[in-house]
Length: 186
Image 1: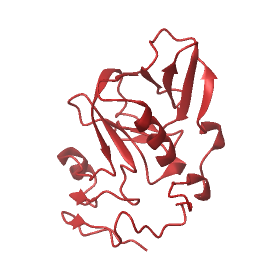
Image 2: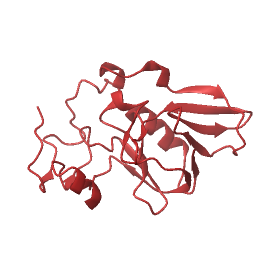
Image 3: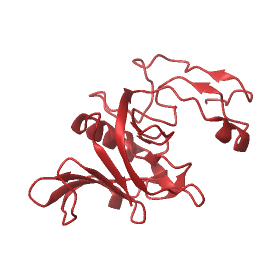
Image 4: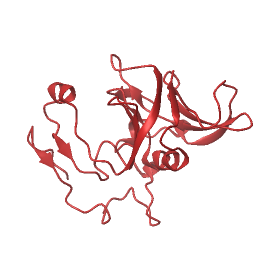
């Protein structure tokens, strides 16, 4: 059982990133959120017909339907389920991916620490980290497209404005996009 640190303290995982003893990890080294209860399978990744006006390679987040689309050539898109900003934390607009990180560390912003003093000021990357397996940073904002250690939140408006994905999905997206990719949040 992982215990939260006292407010204002850092947290380091007990095991290294490469020695994860977590039943959600399958033998091939990949993360499988299906072993965690609560994930709605309608948010599974799939290729769909896409008739939007965005160019191939563009990431489009439909906040209302809770789907992220990576537009492909030929009227197709890869559709991923996502979690989005809760009421008061939603946003819309266009950004671009300015940085990409594997197993990112997390430093909650000061505003978040004011709302949630129980959070650590720092958490090293790893399977218990709220940013999950990958993060793609959007513009100069604090917003990211990132993995999640809570796959049951996919399909819900629960974040502080970031776009959450299952770890296996964010790994897939991370491999398909590059720094400079346009991201449109509707």
